[in-house]
Length: 162
View 1: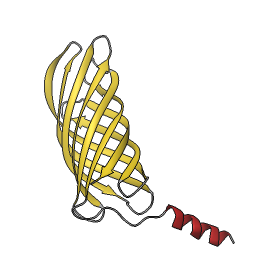
View 2 (view 1 turned 90 degrees about the vertical axis):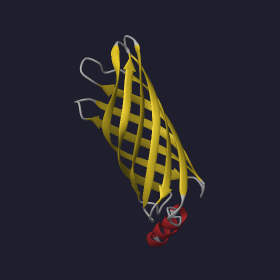
View 3 (view 1 turned 90 degrees about the horizontal axis):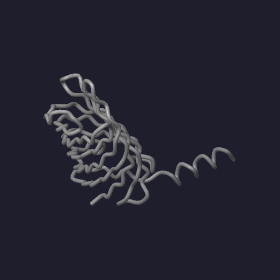
């Protein structure tokens, strides 16, 4: 009997793989973020948009842009963009994924000089596939700049498969 229950459970939460070459996804995320440079480490909010294009069954090309506003002694801001690859395990309704990307970020305001930094990004997330064309989940991003600075964000996101 427990074996039948387990099989029924797997059938209920399983769905065929959605990531296929040429598939497209648009995602919007909002959440908490912070960046750290010498003598400045404010907390704030961020808004991001991702576009993903399926290259293979589990590999996506990802283009991402976002911005943040931070509230310390004075208001500061960030704007960043990256291009990279996402690997997703797209077999069940719960879709874990990881991403590696490179790009740049602009930091300014809040008593700091506006400057542009190169960055490398690592991201992980977990989406719940609500239907073939809609999912939602959580994403964690960590970005590191060459000049001993960093960016961290945790966001809720919603995604639409085109």
